[in-house]
Length: 241
Length: 200
Image 1 (tube, each protein chain N blue to C red):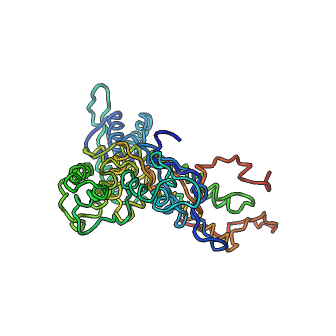
Image 2 (image 1 turned 135 degrees about the horizontal axis):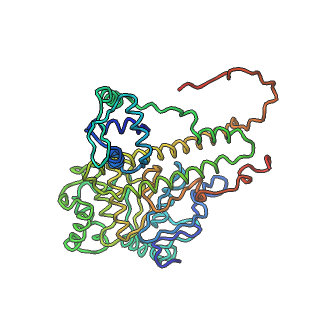
Image 3 (image 1 turned 120 degrees about the vertical axis):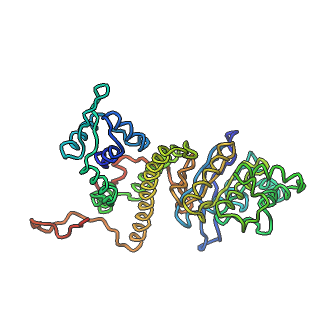
């Protein structure tokens, strides 16, 4: 494993149910994400994109294969340590922001640190830093309802990276935003990645996937080969040869 | 793309000489479509022949200056006020390639679509990378350049969406058993006009 890899999926498969009714959501996925690298995952609905994200984030245990986050093999971790690793290393961004409405922007961003045992007073400093990085230092005391969609998603980005968390897992983060706002959110996400984080961006939108360094296509739970360059004879098969 | 009308619109701002027109054109389109000086001279000749521009008589370092005529001004206004009608959509090379490929036996159409999608995505990534270098467009030149890059980005995106759509449609057709290769017809061919023509 490359020492710079933040995330590695090794032969990851995910199956729901058993026997004849079993559904394979992921099948033998190999994927790495390094520091400073954003990998986009594209595919039609039901291709396994979101399952891949929940498995990569340790929210679901794969049926087989290994998920390694910052050198830690998730399958070997006890639930408590897995939860701690998630809080310390991973930041999630969702389409619908998932901010807590009764907390201010600052409190929302502080939350992961507080859950990790940092006192509320000590958590506010890095949380404010993270909000400043996404250009919302002056909105720290606002509640989500007082912020625009784009601003809420920027709070979510701040929450995803607060306290030096380095692996960002984003599931359609621009899905609920208009085109221009979505682009500014991607630009912000990209800046965090360029500053040393790494991330997976699940999207069905090619224009947004293009912000990534690499693009992986999923189809029926499998990774499609990147631009298969087959000789024409292979494409045409037996009939024409 | 109408270089001719673009140059005429620039001349509508004031007299210019040939090289100056090239610089102004590049500045306003972010050098996305480089035009060589030869093309500029040819275009100027045609504009002069059509009565849309004329020589001012002033010469500066042996550069001939041109200004727009009232007819030229009307032409620019007409251009700005009319929609651009894209011609030849039915002859899109990719659409024809897929249309033909679908009818050939033994061709892996999904592989063709994926090859194209990955290639167009790479183009889209290159364009996005280029765009990322402009953070906050401060000048109108940057803004013009961003408009051009965005138009290429949206065109690439549209192509990918069309590929996704075609893939889904072909998969559905395969399930329903309606996407079958078309063998060569052995019916006698009658000469004459084709039965159906798409008019655009």
